[in-house]
Image 1 (tube, one colour):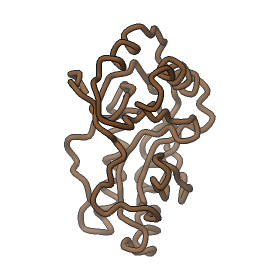
Image 2: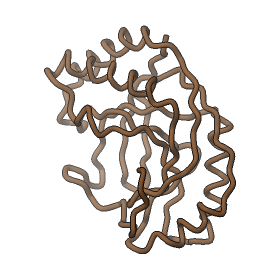
Image 3: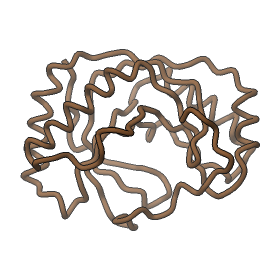
Image 4: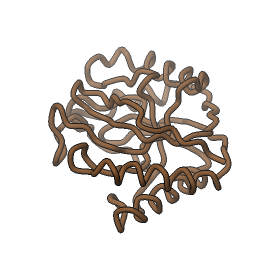
Length: 207
């Protein structure tokens, strides 16, 4: 996320294992009631709107910071998911709630992303969740390395040049948003409608 890509590609290709109707257990940080994050996302949605269907803007309801997956519904055992939740509850109780600065935006080949700082507390939450998963499954899926905390505000809906999007971002003077993170959420997510939508499975308080 440090260098601008030359071209955008469609984010909505079907990744291995995914299809319409499939559901997935994963941990996110979500932003319900985070008015300042919603304010910033709205500024980006408004600025990017003239680009039309080149991008899929993310409504406030579905803003998220991706953390750590567990597995597909029907493959992950319910008893394991409950045990992971219980383990995460214990581990996350040792991590205090924290504040984040969200923004400014950078371009990824598949999305417009908002930087998140500081990233240390976010990594600590993810580390605790990965430990809870490993306690039950032996190891956590997905790699520990390569994780860069971010919040997407729009996904690329096709292949094309980055220049029109980059010009909008360069001309937008949007103040970063302040967020208070006091919970981590295990959700059941799908992407049936070219949007990440979910139902909550468990919301675990920090501290």
